[in-house]
Amino acid sequence: MRITDIIEKKRDGKELSTEEINFFIEGICSGSVYEYQASALLMAICIRGLDKRETADLTMAMARSGDMIDLSEIPGVKVDKHSTGGVGDKTTLVAGPIVAACGVPVAKMSGRGLGHTGGTIDKLESIRGFRTSLSREEFIRNVKEIGIAISGQTGNLAPADKILYSLRDLTATISSVPLIASSVMSKKLASGADRIVLDVKTGSGAFMKTLEDSIKLAEEMVSIGELTGRKTATVVTDMDTPLGNCVGNALEVREAIEVLRGRGPEDLKTVCCELAARMLELGGKGDIAFCRDLVENSLKDGSALKKFGELAMKQGAEYMPWDERAMQEAVVKHPVKATREGYITSMESELVGKASMLLGAGRKTRDGTLDHSAGIILYKKTGDYVRPGETIAELHTSSRKLLPEAEAMLIQAYGLSPEAPAERPLILAYVDSSGVTRY
Ligand code: URA
Image (cartoon, rainbow, N blue to C red):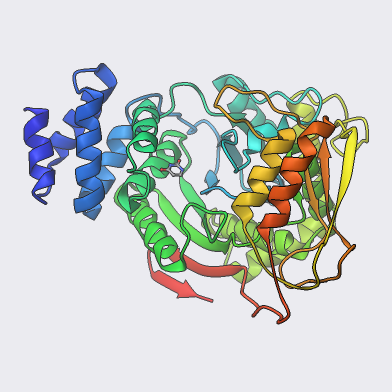
């Protein structure tokens, strides 16, 4: 088999066999397929597409390129959750403990943030002492003992995806539905869960900017799940506005705790509860109405909050996460005032994420350091009316000199108009193997 023949075949719009896809993935891992050849094939895939079988084959080949985590020692149906990434997205911190408190085991491997989007692992590490690098044994033992563990991804999880992802980043081949779907799902399959709930974000702060593209991506991932024997369901949720009022690591943990206490912003609570209910449904707890009740009860009776405390203690936290000593507080807090009057009609979530990153909450490179206390509290969001001089947000950072650029960027994120914006639902669609439901 020759890689040039495979590139030529896809260039001409023909279907690749399972063997050809395996040859490509093995080749990029061993180095026998050069980066320029891989890039050419990625571009051909981007333009010509892959059918469902080819996409499932690519996903399996990438999943098998590294460690395949075996969770069979943990009794029960293991349900994983994954978000395609957004701004202020702390749903794992809330949905994970709820699901575990309701009796479905959560064995979750999470990532770090990059660019304008945050990552669960960085958020958890803002809790003093919280360890996110667990050995396989400790990870499994914790899930068996307390029903939940959240760990960083091992270095060898789907290494082929890491290679392809960095090439895609450099060759304008990121935005291809089969390539995104196989990239996300390869890591999910390698992480070992039986069932998968995906939160596909749509809008200005997300990867997929339109609802139609987001539904296409959701359908593709559900189809991969079916073809590889992992039942998958997808909730498509709004990311035109940041989720909740806090962006930045420690701030987001505090906000997640508020939701676990049954308080916190309504938008965040709605998305977290829906994801948790879908995870419980997939975990076999009952129909969706029953699972939504279970979720509500776990917030009311405090069991979800208690589970978050147990998780933190088990993974080394020095204090309960709601203890004021548990997390660092920013030394500089700077109010941002509205300069104009009107309704907030739009928020460029990506700019909000970037402003937070400039304050120190995110990394500029994969190995960069971050300031866990940095971030933004949004006091006004889409739909609110503001007057000049009113405080719309508060910037948190460790260094005053970071304020001007971040403030200018945040102000640019807000779109104002004399007319109130139309209301947009937060949960836009649900996609599983029986089809698409739009809300
Ligand atoms: N997240 C991933 O893991 N892969 C993609 O291609 C896009 C988002």
